[in-house]
Length: 292
Length: 175
Picture 1 (cartoon, each protein chain N blue to C red):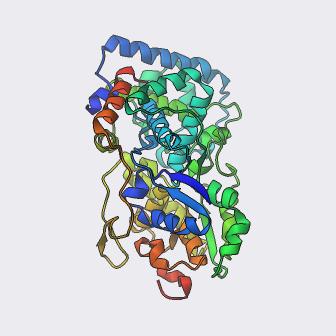
Picture 2 (picture 1 turned 120 degrees about the vertical axis):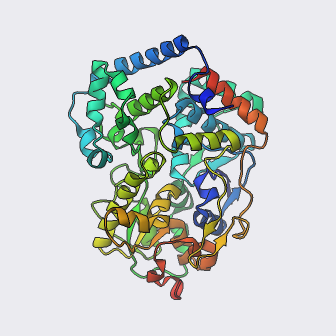
Picture 3 (picture 1 turned 30 degrees about the vertical axis):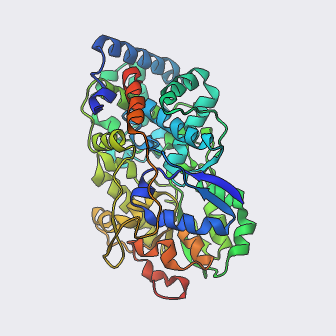
């Protein structure tokens, strides 16, 4: 069993509970042990616009907490994963910055050493657990569910610092979905941004971005829209009705986390996967045989 | 520890101006010369159609030294940081990073921080996370908490005094 410190970030553990529940539920079945550590803070990527040094320092601080326990880090949120990966790249290549950032950490008795590996949800599922193992665990394949994937910008860009899949043609979610019996299909808007980061200062525009993408997904008659980012999911699922209003459309697109769908295919009861927290019309899917 | 400390005012204006000017000079020297205004960044910009952000023009304005104009403009706050411009630039110029720098400079030079950024920053300062732990609604309109759902306590900084000491160091040294 491979062990990781799970770095929860902010949005997942303060409101996107379905993501956390489904992750905690499926990982032990896939021989991944998640270790909870005390003391983590925000990675600060969402407020990088205000102060980049803060982002670097807080990310280093979080990595250092896991390094102290000699653990690698699993960061389910793509935004956190980007912040931690970028911090690692900067501190591993820039000695001056490494020294400066480490000077901030001494009061808490922490030190960034660069020993921890930082993995994302796709690294973990697709590359570390692997497709073969997932295939073994599928008990209830999803019958030809026509799915649209949404990777989230931060999971795949900027590739220069090493991201989890190809920046222009990501396929790992598709590979996983095919393995569990779903039918992922390409759509031209696949790489469009959800706009979530504008929520801070231009919330209407953020919702418009969300609405525009979902409207196109609906027009192309997808059964479900699958994501892996708590920020994106909050836009597409939790705020779907509001997003629809911005584009004058009645949106009824079932939105699920990849980890929820994976759990369903593994035969895990839907209440353990937080399916009663999805606010989009997932009852349309008739998941797990019964009405959700 | 206040937001003002972490953003501006905390130190003498001359020192601050000097550091900002040096940073801008670096940006101008390192980045803008490579840009030949092909506008590939703008063609794929997520904020272009909706909010009229034109990353190639941001780089052009930087090259011309029209920095105050940009720092004082709302347009720098329309970037969604999708990183497509950085990904696609044939010259390895990263308009998104220029925008991050301009926003940091705007904040450091005492401009008002737009929207909810202040609240998020304040929350990180006071509890280490972007927002408080929330109760959420279920599909059948019941309010549930993390505990109801069987989730463990949220991880956050344990020694608050030390955590804030770290943040105040960053506030003093700055960008």
